[in-house]
Amino acid sequence: MNREKKIRLGTRGSALALTQARMVCDRLKANAPEIDIDIRIIKTSGDKITDRPLREMGGKALFTKELEQGLFRGEIDLAVHSMKDVEVPLPRGLIIPCFLEREDPRDVLISRTGKKLRELPEGARVGTCSPRRMAQILSLRPDLTIVSLRGNVDTRLRKLAAGDYDAMVLAYAGLKRLRRTGIITEVLDTDIMIPAVAQGVIGIEVREEDEALQKMLKTFSHRETEKTVHIEHQFLRGFGGDCTTPIAGLAQINTKAEEEGRMSLAAMVALPDGGKILERSLEAHFEDLSLKAYALGQEFKAWYMTNMM
Image 1 (cartoon, helix red, strand yellow):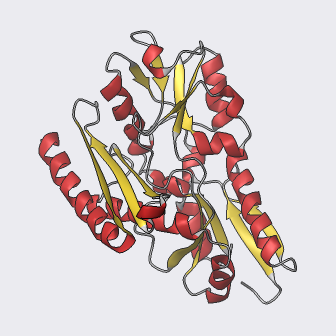
Image 2 (image 1 turned 180 degrees about the vertical axis):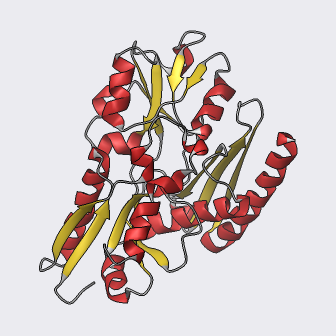
């Protein structure tokens, strides 16, 4: 943070990204009213190229690369990310010291006819660009047709209305932040579809050397969200996965009084066509679960490589 008490906040330019950036601004202003915040829109490669699947373009880093370059060049002081788009580990010299409280991490189905996932007719066209969603849908409904779907929420909804798709799957969190939940046909509970790692979480990335800004951000970081993201990232680190792998993980803190301090992790990996799927659940205290999550990731990696041969 510079001496003029001005923070340059970098964000993508979609309606959802700007909504999330304003959420961060509100938290910053609440903690330091004297701070002047300059929102700078940075167009990422993922925003520029929307006619190809992410797996063909270099992965989820296409949504964060230009923002991180802006941090390295000193053009912005912090970058706001949807954490499901952030690959681990982070580039050397950058750190995420702050997470806003997690929104509902589940996926949702939106269909033109109001039919739920199990009710869609055979051969119905379901839009998604996520290998994870595709594999889990096909595991449950192998008779459906998965069609690649890119673009922001409004673009996707226009394509659905035009009849390009019979249904599509989106993140619940984004629609809640945009106040668009009225279009949801079905919320897909985690027994149907385990979410992406860190789905529903907003993270704030800064330069590791910027200790003053880190200190400010840590004052309103949501501790429970930090812990769940850590567990999920440990699982992902153990697997060594990227956006081309159908992999999912959701950590939660147990709320029952007799289980105070314990956490759970639900994890999934599948073959791309959903023909084989491996799911596992773990439960332990935070420190133990961190180690077990990493080991589970390694176990899942071995299973995946064996079955992909």
